[in-house]
Image 1 (cartoon, rainbow over the protein chains, first blue to last red):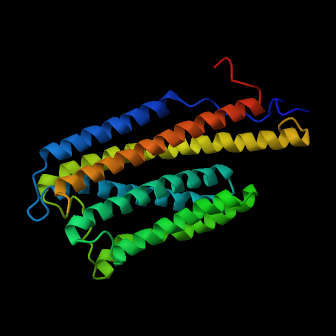
Image 2 (cartoon, rainbow over the protein chains, first blue to last red):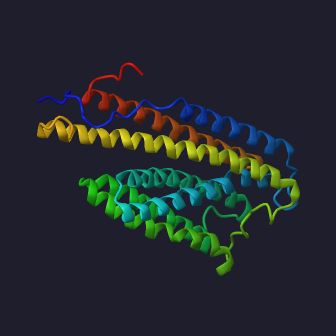
Image 3 (cartoon, chains in turn green, yellow):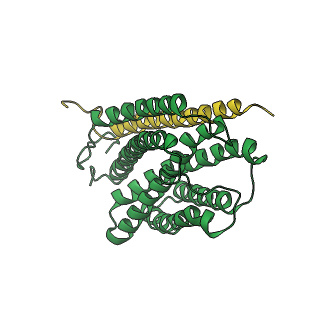
Length: 240
Length: 48
């Protein structure tokens, strides 16, 4: 039997147009939110225009937290139900979370240099965010190096669930320890002149995050279906 | 040291580079995985 034998598993449908619409909406929303924030927010008393970095740095950090929360939920769900789709969704969210986590760190360094005079300081917020990033790079490396799908899913669910526990530590780090990093920026702690800009940028980035996770999950499902089809063809079972 | 505006421009530029680079990675990987899936199963899906 050749690899071109049809699989008896249900075919994975072509990507839906709603996904493309969501992606376009996300990028358009980010453009609108950033233009609005840059044009309408006044220079801050201490930082001047550097404050505008908040509109990308803070939403990127929030998206990191949201993505890793998704990892936690679907990792626990996988360990509970052993449904491979839960594992694939957790992995998709982990990759997107790692992208936003890396972006958060880079933007923080760019903001820190003119504000604190250094690119990096080993303070609690920065260090715990770096640890979070390294945990999820480890998570992705684990998935890349383990071949057995079941073992990969179990191990990464355990790492994902334990790694996501670091999220509240990152969030609370500025309250628990004396740090160089300021208190968390949120609509409740900001001057009203900056809240709408932050809210718009967070919503825009959230649309984009949902699109990225959804797209990555879609890819993972197609790749997993290909693995099943290849295994079935190799065993000569025609897709079972 | 560069001006504050330079750091703001750098921050927004890096944001867009990362977002667009990740989008490009997803698009390329989606095309590749779909082509592999079609090759392994019944060829390009028809009648949809």
